[in-house]
Length: 489
Image (tube, rainbow, N blue to C red; front, side):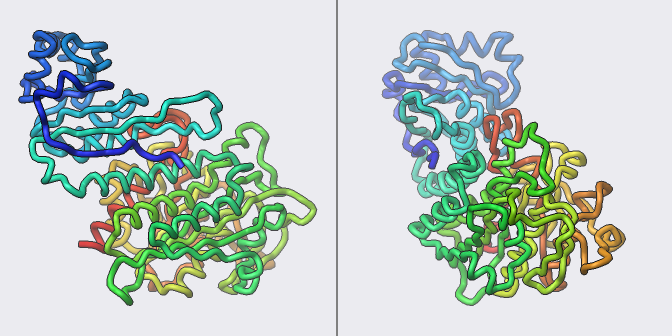
């Protein structure tokens, strides 16, 4: 697994700044004011920093931007990063500044001269998140990345914060790694093995195999994977850090490790991207890792349905009727609408087994949500205004785009079947909404529930603020904050 750069906070020692190697970052306010550390850097560089802050180049920088100065005179560092940031920045500005440092970091040690800067933890988080690179399948030798050291005037006030920041970054990195892995590596079995390994962090991990799933009646989930040689599985991860007996929050993830569309075969162009169709399960795994690493004082259970959707002589056909664990029958119109079949059974199992206080499912479910929201926002559907509001607040605080879309019985007519209780698709109109309406049938009326359609945000074709091109890890930070804000406070 890709691990974040080691993070530590320590006291400022002005006399050692000149001997720091690798990359040194210094902050200058919008007005050009230099703090204690910046004044020492300016003295070491014989006024170069002050000359730069008086230049048009500095004036043109936006808040949070950085400018790289190579081999600064009077310092041992290879690079000096000058960051435009006031002493009391907004959280978004601090994280942007950190992300710019993380992007430029490379493999060398990053020394951040924060001094008395506020929101320094957000600078560190931004740096760790953006300094990600998925290189597991590249053969060229690469230096092991060195860490990030943040120099502050009172590091004791930040004791313990490095662990919490690293826990969030670890969860995001796990999600990105899983979503980036090719399907011949991340089989359903390998996925389950990686989740089982998190028992070392204190999670209780249970893997349900196909015989157990058949006994439980998870036939819609099994119908998706029956055309593949990879066995279908459900993995349950329990974190019991809260009060004994308190109902947990349940997180449910779609884990289709590769989606050909099945008999309703997808076009060849772009099918290689379907390695990311387990993105919902990847987010659930990342959140559970973060909660365990930071010893969250909450009860949370993560459940993921792991399948592979392949065409074969044994694959589910359009027109087949299958019976869900709930007992409802589903006419399969399109085998490429498979994620909702996986989620239906896992949602029902989660409620029967754990009687949760609320359920949030995540899935790269529909292309329709990308048409509606693009790659900036995940679609949010919910039967509970309070839970939806809490999640949207958490997502906004973490700068993870999310937008609520409607649920309404009027859409149910599109799911009517002549031969079964429902169809698995409702046609092209309102495709993401009818998918959510389908899932809602497997949620008890008194269970607060959110469905997150993350098809547009799980993996993208260009870099984002906190990630390079590819898997983003969207959702780990928002869900971790939701747990902190609603279950731990």
